[in-house]
Image (cartoon, rainbow, N blue to C red; front, top):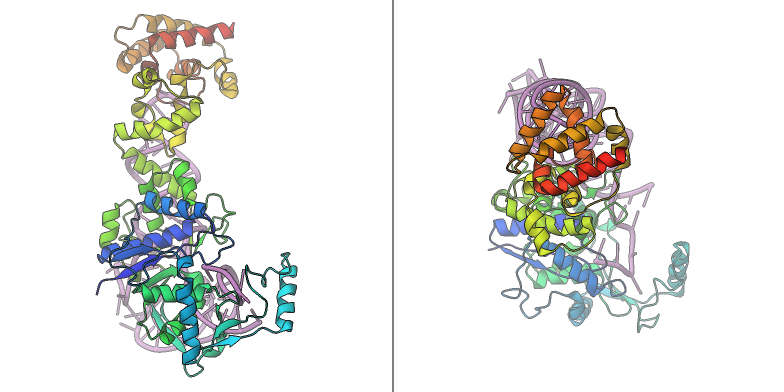
Length: 473
RNA sequence: GGUCCCGUCGUCCAGAGGCCCAGGACGCCGGCCUUUCAAGCCGGAAACGCCGGUUCGAAUCCGGUCGGGACUGCCA
């Protein structure tokens, strides 16, 4: 039998890094076994769910390269992937459970309502927060599962091994709210059954809910899926990764110039490894050797620095054309205006200048701004550290003279000319070249000098050297 | 508090009784290269939480302890 897995995000926020990693593992496992991977939108929290979040989530999954299977063979009579479309089904199941004695209707008492109000107030919410739902009267009651007390609820978790809970530790949880909508436990379990999910791989935070899902699945008389509880992700501060932590949203990484392949690779390494040695690998390589049984039990700290390193590795591996194309929007941002076709044709090939030294695409854009913009101010500290020194005027004069008589304006020819100058002046290489760098690029930190001069062109290079010379007085 | 899960370098991962006085990677430190910043290359510091037990032998098995985490909602 082929495997069928799912990721079930709630559209109550953007795609979180933790959810993305869970999606990744589900995807890897299903692809490894040539199975099915589906996306189900768990939007039973109608108050907080939005279409915008749903779009962000799907876009981010696509960007990561986690393609999912739609339609064919999925869902049987209940073909929807959105839980809000299936309320009738959940209600019908809940009522069926009452008939078999697995669940019961629980009309709430005034005392309970009071305690709900009190709790809401204690948490700074509206008094009716836990009570009032659209179109509901307060005394409808809820439907709860009744927990069989006969035996421990045990299962073998694919990553954790044997886990068991005592029935007395499982409370009579609510499956249908008083407004007739399902709770997460009901909707999720019914869907997993209806869609014939074979493996439920999700965050470890749901481990304590698993006995509830097992009981529900049994009560439904359905086949039990295998469960796999993935280790949680933490921020560098050691706390659970949340929206508060820097960039917990996957879309943010895309926008900041990370490559999808790098993020995919890095995420795969959080709780898993290809062979214990290899750090950089392709999607296919990961698919080929992934197994839920190899997933680590320990929570993992998300390390932005390692991600950045990995991104640099992927950027260096890009073809020059691809790199140029990817950097272009970042140049536009850094320069602050659109580029003309002419500018792009003349200066757009920046790969030789910055590709091997960039970790994040936006940095590359900033490093080549000098090609596109005739700045009129110099980086302050660069100026004081490099230009405000003895002999700089003479260096610039000599450089201008030498560069003026270079034949072909190539990096090699420029280098020869400047090295000849350095020898003639008898000064240090760094001492001679840094002022030229600042004069031409505006900063003491720039791409390689000879290549930069070559890319800028003779005329503009000399102009800038001349202008800096004047500013020296 | 209760229930459950987890415990190898700062961080991620390897290690499924002898191959481990513990391996790879990020980061860090030092060096080389060098026109800056990177990249690259070379080298270094850095961990089996603790106590018992099993065994000829334990990072690996068992127990305890300590520590961390998750859950404990008509959220998911």
